[in-house]
Image 1 (cartoon, rainbow, N blue to C red):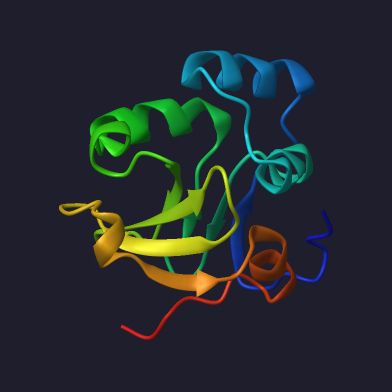
Image 2: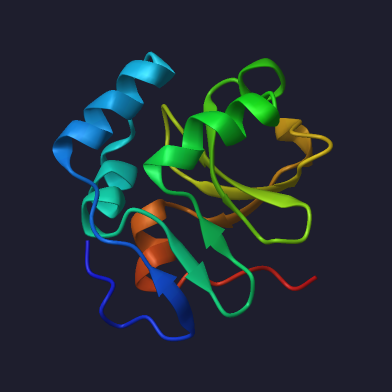
Length: 130
């Protein structure tokens, strides 16, 4: 997945290794969506100047447990946040990138911000207006 077009990056981590991704899948007890796997193989977490944070493999399990994603939003995975109380979620079985308040996590409250992760990356990770 290409990210060299991105601007306004505060921090970009080195790519995740196949071993780190396999360990994450083991902890989550499920395979990662292909597009998310490709993103992690490109950069294992990013921080943008606008506050957008994409979690590293070290943070994904902890954040999903803390937000109780498995209970309130089964079928989704929290992969980042806006540093302002909203989580960035991806659908596991289908495609789509969503934002939802961390206090809710209800899929009915999610706002779709892209049809798929690859498009969201290609478009430069645009965030919805607050």
